[in-house]
Amino acid sequence: MGKKKGVPEWLNSPLWSSSNLPPVNDTSDRDPPSPPQLDDITVDRRSTSHKETLTSTRRQPETSIIPPHSSLSNHPTPVLPASVASVVDSSPAISQEEFSRQSQILAEVINVGELRMLTAQGVPDGSGIRSTVWKILLGYLPSDRSLWASELSKKRSQYKAFKDDLLRNPSEITRRLDESSGVKSEDSSFEGNCLLSRSEIVHGEHPLSLGKSSVWNQFFQDTEIIEQIDRDVKRTHPDMDFFCGDNSFAKSNQESLRRILIIFAKLNPGLRYVQGMNEVLAPLFYVFRNDPDNNISIHAEADSFFCFVELLSEFRDNFCQQLDNSVVGIRSTISRLSQLLKRHDEELWRHLEVTTQVNPQFYSFRWITLLLTQEFNFLDCFHIWDTLLSDPEGTQKTLLRVCCAMLILVRRRLLAGDFTSNLKLLQSYPSTNISHLMYVANKLRG
Image (tube, rainbow, N blue to C red; front, side, top):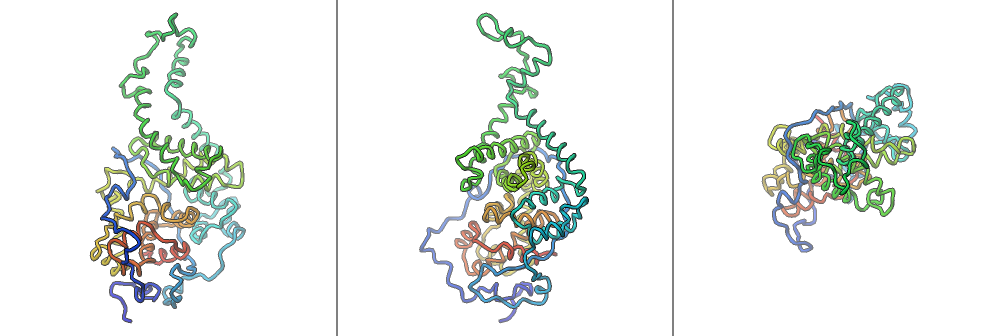
């Protein structure tokens, strides 16, 4: 069989072939959906007036990923071209102990470059290594281990101050203002008829005040966002007892998510809270809260907040509705994904976007904005994030390569499909081998 035009050498393997497939256009088991409306496939976003300044973190090189057996196991394993085989590491999966030793995770000064190279191969599950690794990769922990105690103490104290300042009820705020200004105690501030004396109500602190500096006016403006956060937090991974179990532990975890998102919204008035941020926060909090060291896990809320801020610093423009049509907005990001697919697999790109007219926005908006947290098993997402956080080119570029690899992994079905079947496939992505997905994504580099 001749080579396909516009397809790179490594994609000419039978693994990606669409021949001898059963028809996928049979819709006898479903009603054909109509073209989706944008509101049905995107997360809601609130407009913003400007970008907030957040610090981003540079990444270090990613190494090759070992491709295990493909999810397309019904096809014989192809003989890989030399250009592909040369980057395949045949060594067994690295153990937790070996990971700790090689990355010098316990050394006085950690070699962050080596740590990132190891992380790209996948962090071993089990004993809290991922918690520490993510904090280092996100810049929350410095490479100098001797500075950890002081940095953590400073950050956690800062978060406590945020909670004290931003989560108080306006009544509590005005009471403290009264006390600091020498106003009489509560017992003496009532007249005989038990009504608050008019002379002791400051106009800017009156519940009906419309002043911009009024704590009550700000409180009522925040109510809508807080209600949205409450709804979203309660819907976060409803199938997991950790988040939605009928116990005090799950409820305390929900409260932590809620506080983090409220504080973030108040500290970032230009962006505030956007629906879906809870899904990006959830993996961070889950990993940190499950650290086996109780002295670390009890501070999961504060640690998650700062790592969430750092992670979002590279993706915040995707949540900003006013930037949608700019060079940094979500539509531009989706366009870059389309161009990436065209460059690496023009045949698949043409079939999707020209022949079947599947707009990439119909499926990739959620992939990109939620960092693939809704497309795979929750625990599998950790391995994807290991790669996202360790790449030298930045998390967003790596994410686009992973999204492109997702399309390539199901190219046989996509090439044999029409608009209806392809859209259904991509909006409900099938189970796949995550290590193999990361391997294909790595091949798209450059």
